[in-house]
Image (cartoon, rainbow, N blue to C red; front, side):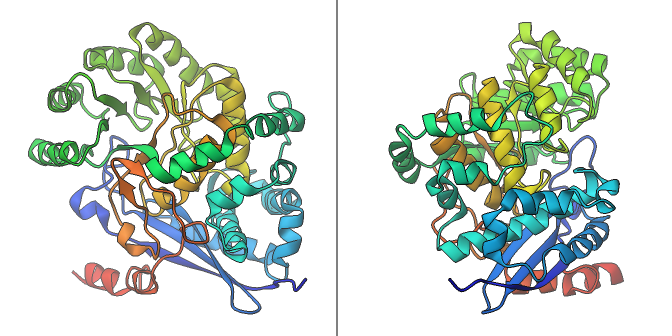
Length: 438
């Protein structure tokens, strides 16, 4: 078999000025410029893999530097050797005796790891001629387990337990795959109620979403209680009592403050409060979850959860009722697989974080795999959708009837258009040259 040698890894700083119109604004991040560190891996013979990690503008150049530092572990390797021992390759990237000091497995270095490994997974799926979700679904369970790093989580999930989960899910798997191809995976929208939007804009977008068939809505909260009460009341009246409402504070509060604030919003019947406090505060999340349980409000978190170890502890502490994986915060597909399996063992539904730049494109593959090959359930499960910047991808996400349509093109849906990368490159792209000069 001819092996594909990796001969180059390039990375670009690509930013979109979303702050100009308050897209993505929340209580802690009022002016985000949605951005990516965009990695491209090339092999001999011309096959390419595309990966990214998401940022909010400033600091993307730091992630780019980290990707460049990791490229030394990738260039010269053969794709086939990597996937034959993917766990070993994951450990190579995350456990170098010197590089791990600036993590380990968290922060900038883990974001960079995600960009690199997302590109490797895209490369592998393209080499196999399959969309990533299909590559995962078709993969032999033992092979899939060999891609996962179990170090530090075996007290909660052993390799044997993980394998047993996958083997049990073989029953009915093809039927669930057919269901997804016909119906898609249920989504919820965050596009209507960014915290910087006016009431008029919120009402207009909410009405449009209702007309388009959306039944699940998320509202950003946390900046001002009276403002939150007004906006939640407005949304609840528009969507009616039967549609689903979620609220998201983006880490704004202390623990006691979160309990008090959300209790005041309980009349609007939110399904969950997302990121009520520091994403690192496991016991704080547990206290909030316990206090809000009598009100029927769950806690959701995970978009800024550093690694599988934190998810393990959140689950062990009953600190969350909804697991929110992120395709670029964790160490790519490898680490997300471990969290999907952990969540299933603990009986907690996975409702991924998405939006930004490319997060919807990527995470759809993971949630399809979760339903088809792990959980087999759609109860209390949905995947976030934000209608921004999809036009910059060669294979943009497709939403029909408020559901993700399974992608059919080979790869991880992570390739961006060359013109978009060039024009939005920071700081030399045409878009930024005009803005910086004004």
